Length: 508
Image (cartoon, rainbow, N blue to C red; front, side, top):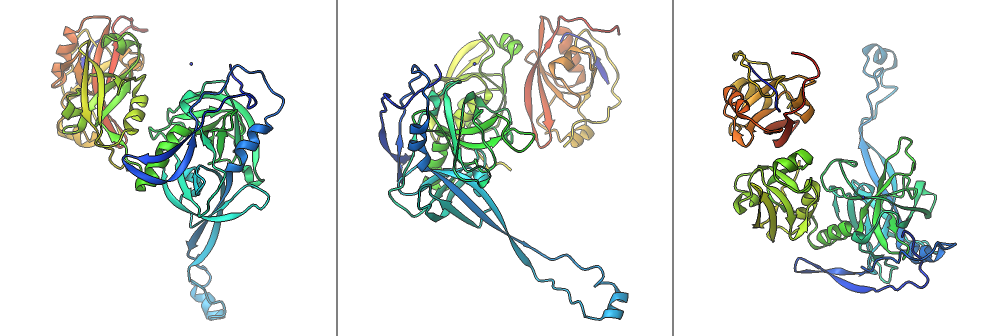
């Protein structure tokens, strides 16, 4: 075992007097025409008007488009065995007086939610979790007659929690879709749905935050929620979040709550994202997403300095999968992608969303920084594949060596036992991290036991001795590490920047 020493972001609008420019678009889906027509209004709301005394005009405009959804799931289960019936003594006294029925039994499980009519001919947007697994779906239209229809599922997308339903009807009150990219924090919004099944309900709030993700609803990578304090409760899921023009800006999907009821933190899928998913589901029955074939991490201030960036923006490429679109286009590990199709990328999540919005087979431009120089590449996107152990190995008997870099870190050679236990691919070469002292600079940077040091200051690491040699040669305030790490069923490389200036808090 070898010891490596230290360096290492106007708020209201009214309906009266506002100018609404409405265009009617026919869904065109990657060259294929679909049936529905929906209304789209991309005009921003007027943020300069004063607070009114009623939101009734907004509600009258939007509420007829919001429907109640009732789902039924048939649960089939076998009856439990009667332990007395199986007992020989019981059978001796009572014989077959208590026959046991072992035939399957069925029960119905009811669910409720909301939806939004987006086309006059019966297409409805709702949440995936409202209808998933349902054997029967009923849709109740708002209005005096409360007409009810049987709906069929056109398609669902669990990754964004969006689903599309279809009912056989015409002349329905379709809502107008807004441009959710025009939203600003502080814009007033209304949530309309069927909470707890009490009937259509309207609640008032504002846009509390935008671009919420960070795994708040399943960590699937496609979260880009609108956060609102408009009360959202069970039954609101799939309902409408509307602006002060009565236009749809989001599909309510879930709440953060310790009680199960609204506590002022609700989330909605932006309508732009929901519309793109809807178009693909109607066109092909499933959502095809663009794919680069890379793993990414965000850029912090230290990494920005290491890679010669003006600030902590962009997506740092960790791994490039062999023979995948990024590899074929010339993207390399260590590149920092700063723009995609001409749009600046703030972080890896924004890049992932941008790529997934593109059609497989389309050509995209990628602007990146490599070795402090700007470079633009063209890449033909692939299709994202369908998505479907433990760190820590026993130390081996390598000799202990010391140097002046990465103090508090112990490394060893990668042997067959370590590769098997950590499931480290054969193509990964480097030094296995056996120990990281908790108060070390490396631990503060995020280095962990079970990581593999692949590069130090962009120089490859072949084994433990090579790691020590690279550390002895390291100079500067920061040491750039490239590591490989396994996290459950996921694995890949990432970069860490280790402070090489701080002194240890305790003597060694």
